[in-house]
Image (cartoon, rainbow, N blue to C red):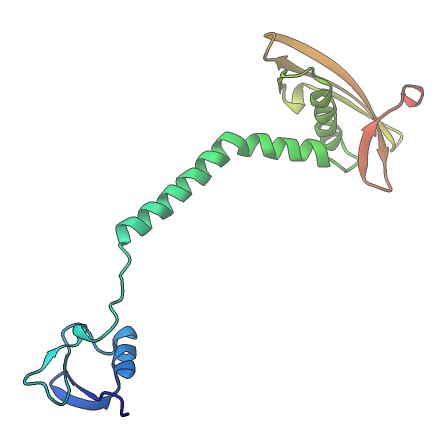
Length: 178
């Protein structure tokens, strides 16, 4: 049994013979378009090639762009709502250098961890804190902030010890406090 043979009329020229699979491939890759005509033995006249090729479904650009913009808007909203808080929490947990800024960030994290359920705090800036580094292995940080649930300003004194091997600020046991 012989495969069907097609001829196409493209850009003023007759070309072929092609199998239906070859004509479909030429259309899919864009070599021929919807205005191209085809003919095969037994036909009286040329017909549009769209009758024999698999139709490509072109994506609606409005839908694609709407989805892309919607995703971008959702990401932007997430970053706007949680980006700052997430960055602060990361710094509070990973502060690991022996300097005043790292001690301040770690002290914030320890204070936040000790708050009672549902309580949150907005800390004063580092410039308003009192930070004292002691003998390359300890620090005392006095920092303030607004307790949001009870609407009051509070101060905390946090004593830290520095573990140089692990590069971490840890809470200082009472007997080690300077």
